[in-house]
Image (cartoon, rainbow, N blue to C red; front, side):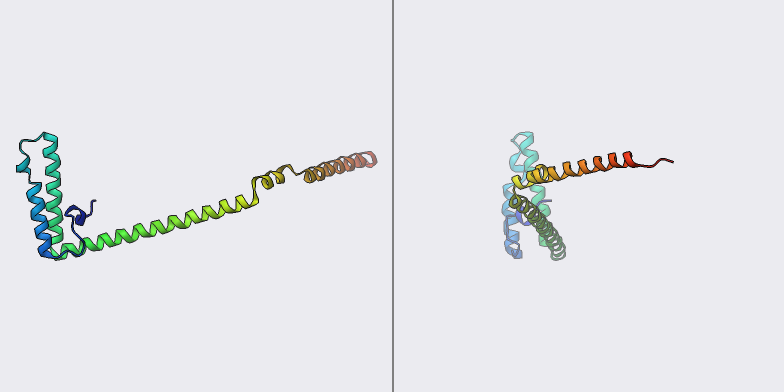
Length: 143
């Protein structure tokens, strides 16, 4: 849905007289009768614009309808601002993760996987395990 104030090219705080003047200027400019000799697509485009202008003026010139419309606009703006805030928070969370990762560094990350000391400890453990297994099998008593 397009902003009705933008359709009439007026400020949100426009008064009734200025609104009426702007509406009349736009209605004259986009009246379908002025485009009778134009192509079908151009006439449809102008007709659509003329209907938007009428709809905008009908809503904004009526005090109650305008209040309701402004409430809807404010609610959607608040919703939009909340979503932007959430998105910024999520982005900062991702930035924190990236920051932690980059501080650790790629070399440190790979070092954890391919650390020679850890590899030696692992081989030592495997050797002890095999030795214990052989020892137990040699001295085990079978009933």
